[in-house]
Image (cartoon, rainbow, N blue to C red):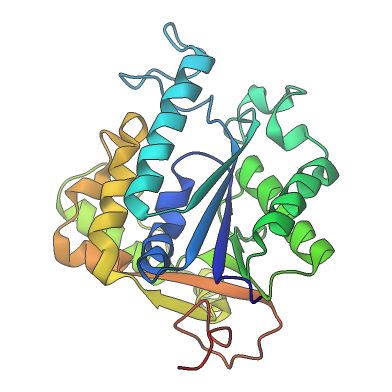
Length: 279
């Protein structure tokens, strides 16, 4: 019997599934494809209600974790996710926080242990496509890097997925977002000087993208899933973007095809290109 088409997304924290892969999860679930989200941590170092940060009075790690997992389940329901798997590790916090030095922090769990658990899920669900982060990408959160390293090892070790994709974001799209928010008077990073070196780096990032999926038909569902994580983005700038800018910047999700056994030509507009049975 042929395994059902299955997409597995391996993420670090509750809300990552919506921000970087919400569009493809909603798109493929709408096509009847099984979608599996693996969330490595419980998000203990997110904000408590009222924007209370870790270390401040009123921030209770376990309460925050339970709230974030509740929000995660709601978001996955909006996106039509078939199966949610929680690995239950402890959030490591941001790269410049001391919390990441705790022995129970996810980034300090041996990669082999995490990879073995992800491998077990790959063997259980047998996804043709796995999506995770780019360990060389610009966002070097220790939990994102660790989740990606474990997922990549699991894909290679099991040999089951036909395709491995790494999430990517086009610098040109972020420039549109920042420009629009500045015009609205929002407090966002000042524009960087576009030196020849930076221009080259941006060009290389854009050129590395192999696969772009049009998610405009489900963009509203992605937005609703993001806002299901209300405790983390109640003051988010995302809600303040004009609709045309939001569609231009977030109306597609981009990926780097890291490994492939399908032989599908590049560039692609479908993560399952080369894997679907001909009609």
